Length: 322
Ligand code: BDR
Ligand code: CA
Image 1: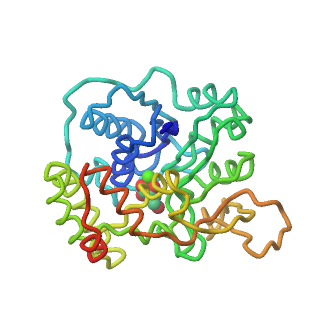
Image 2 (image 1 turned 60 degrees about the vertical axis):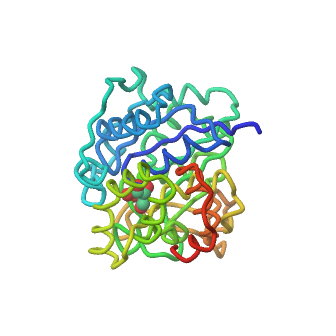
């Protein structure tokens, strides 16, 4: 089977780390580069965390590019309250090697890479800061990438940073607004309506110890802080892992369903960062996004667990634990 080539733009981040582990080990994906955007953690810390995951997977051959350090216009607000001061649940893991990020910036890399048509897609798991800037430098970027999947936004689900806004688009609403307006390709939006269905429960986590103890221990360590955050702010026992769903949906779009609509991002006032999705076509503008609203959670967990743990799962048990 021909592997699908992807570039992952991310801000690791606990769920970004899980998404990287998933994508890198998936038999149908070829991760050709990782670009780091300011988001959950400052960019330099995101670079450190991406390299830590690559080191762990023995995949330091995948180049990492450091992106911008601040959103386009707003002051930077990280999500270290959610992901821990180190971005990985305050595990403070240290690296064993000194491999560094590439000398080229993520923005230059992305703008240059998509100068010509390619068979490479982008999966964006953080604020769209790097993508917006690369698009300013190369307006053909959208036309020259295969697919563009973005974890962010929300339709009917409430926000997680304000009543109406999701973190990635709230952190850099101007970047999100520019990308939705100017990409020139339908943005496949994996928002909170579907990612909130993906809850890593204590039972499921415990079950994974019987699939591969070392991997389970690592996931348990990085998600402990995230569990506490979810209990405190959302009264959830477990944690929502948003970003891996964007990868799963990229691999198999049939696991989610939704609709296409014109979508804009609010850049000011009380609706800052909100995805304004014209599901009833008030504006009469052509659709620029595909908005996902439902997900087959078991299909997600099946592919995610078998990939991360290199093991067959027990369907009945997993269905009971999700
Ligand atoms: C998004 O924000 C971040 O905290 C997560 O990594 C995810 O990309 C969810 O709102
Ligand atoms: Ca993220």
